[in-house]
Amino acid sequence: MKKFEVQNIKDTRSGFGAGLSELGKTNPNVVALCADLTGSLKMDAFQKEHPERFYQVGIAEANMIGLAAGLAIGGKIPFTGTFANFSTGRVYDQIRQSVAYSNKNVKICASHAGVTLGEDGATHQILEDIGLMKMLPNMTVINPCDYNQTKAATIAIADYENPVYLRFGRPAVPNFTSATDKFEIGKALMLNEGTDVTIFATGHLVWQAIEAGHILAEKGISVELINIHTIKPLDAQAILNSVRKTRAVVTAEEHQMNGGLGDSICQLLARELPTPLEMVAVNDSFGQSGTPDELMKEYGLDAAHIVAAVERVIKRK
Amino acid sequence: MTDIRTLEQTASQVRRDILRMVHGAKSGHPGGSLGCADFLTALYFNVLNHDPKFNMNGKNEDVFFLSNGHISPLFYSVLARSGYFPVEELKTFRKLHSRLQGHPATAEHLPGVRIASGSLGQGVSVAAGTALAKKLEGDKNLVYVLMGDGELQEGQNWEAFMFAAHHKVDNLIVTVDFNGQQIDGSTMEVLGLGGDIKDKLLAFGWEILHMDGHNMQNIIDTMAKAKNAAGNGKPIFIIMKTEMGYPIDFMVGSHKWHGIAPSDNDLENALAQLPTTLADY
Image 1 (cartoon, one colour):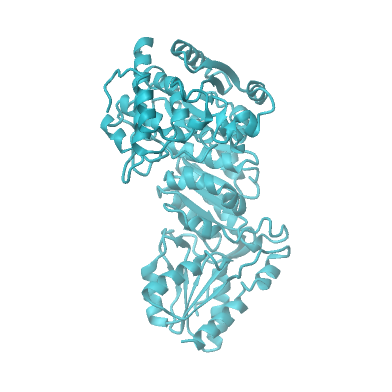
Image 2 (tube, rainbow over the protein chains, first blue to last red):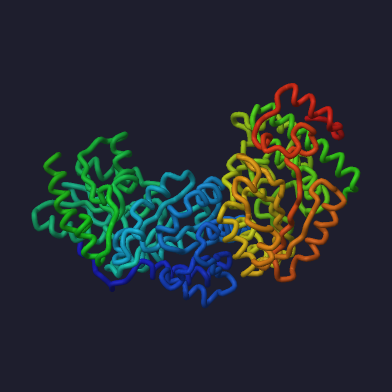
C-alpha cells in the first residue's frame, strides 16, 4: 500500500474558503451568498475581499436558493454556503424547481456534512444529503476528501456550467492530496492499485480507507483504493475496470447506506457485473452528540470497520 | 407604446386563448389567468422593454417572472401574441411533448420562460436574484414579478420581502394579484393575513402602490408610477385588485374556477362574451 505524505491536518471547509477566495480574484462573475454562517463556512475571506459580490441573506435558506437561481439567470455564478442539512433537506423543493429542473448554474456548497460535525448532534448531522441531491436530474454531486481536493473542486466547479452540490465537513483531517492536482469532475482517482479487493471511498472516509489499506497489507491482502469524489455522474468505467480485476468490493462513506455512494455502486454492479459487496456507511440511523472520532467509531465508519468489511467480502468471493 | 383601446382588444383575444387552451387540454387554471389578463397584456405590450428574440440572461432588457405558475395559459398566450413563439403552438398546451407544460418550465426551451414555477412562493426570491445581477452589471432595466395572493401564505415570500428591503433591491417591482380566492375558498377563510397587506409590506420597508387590475388606463398609469419609484432605495409592491374569472359572468369572483376546465357549453357561453380581435389560433 502506497504511503501518502500528510502535509498538514486541515478542515475541508477551509479548502472551500480558500478556493472561493481564489475564484474571487480570477473570476469576476463568481458571487457568494451565505445564510448567517460566514465564519463556519470560511467565506469571510471572500466577503472581505469582494463585499460587492457577497450577499448575507440571514437565516433564510429558501430565499437564498431562489436568489442564487436568479443571479444565475443574470449570468452570475452563485455559490451558496450553509451547513449541509440546511443546504439540502430544508430547501429541497426550492432546489428541485428553481435550480435542478430549471437547470441553473448554481453551486450549492455544504459544510458540516455527516456525523463528524460532532457535538451539535443529529439535528445538524445530515446523512441523507448525497441521496437527496443525486436523485435530482441535472444535479452533479461532489464530495472531496481533504483540504487540497476541496479547494481544487471549488475552483473547478466555477467553470462547469451545471447545478452542483459540493459537500465538505467541519473536522481537521489529514491533508494528503497534492496542492497542484487538477480536479476533474466525474473522474475516479486511483490511489493504490491492488488485486484482492477494491475499496471505493468518498469524503472523509478516503483517509480511513488508506489507513485500512496499510493494516490489510500487513495481513497480506492487496487493496485497490479508488477515491470517488464525484458521486454523480459516477465514473462507471473506472469502477467496472477495477471490479473486473478484484472481484470484491467495499464502499465507504459518511452517509446513510440508503442513497449514498454504495447505493450508486450497487446499482451499477447489479446491472453490469454482480459482485460480492460490503458497505461501510450509517445503517438507517440518526447520529448523536460526541467527538468526531468517537462518532466515526460508534457508527462504524473508521479504518477498523473498513478492515472488517474487507475481510467479510473476501470470504464471499 | 400601444394605446389603451388596442391593449383592451389584445386582452380580449388573450382571454379567448386562455379559455380555448384550458378547454382543449381539459385541464388548467382559467380563473387567475382571466383575472390577470389585463395586467400581463399591458406589461408585455406597453410596459416592458423586452426582446421577443429572447435571451435567457435578460441583459439590457426588463425581465419578468411569473411566480404563480398555474396561470400559465395567460403567460403562454401573451408570450405568443407578443412574438416569442408561433401562436399556433398554443394548441399544444399540456399535451405530450409540448413546450407548453402545465406549469412554466425551461427544460423544453420555450422562449420567454426563464425559470420553472408552480411550486409557489419562489418567484420573488428568483426575481430579487436577477435584480441583484442587474445591479452588478450596471444594467438599469427592471425586474418584474407577478404573484398570487394565496401564495402569500408561503413563508419564503416573507424571507424575500425582508431581504429585498434590507438590501435595497430597488429595481424590483412585485405585483400581487389580489383576487381574494384560492383553491379551498376565499383567502380570508383559508388563512387570512390578519390585517392589511399594505401595512405589512410598508413595515418591511417597501414602496406600496395600488392598482385596479381591470382598468387598462389605471394599469398603465400605475406601472409608470412604479417605474418612477424604482431606484429610490426601496423595492416596489403593487397591490392589484382583480376578480378571478373576470369578465365571464358565470366565473367572476368564484374560487370554483381556480383550476377546472370549461365544458363545451361553458366555452361557447364564455367566448360569446369576448370579441375576437386578433383571430383565434
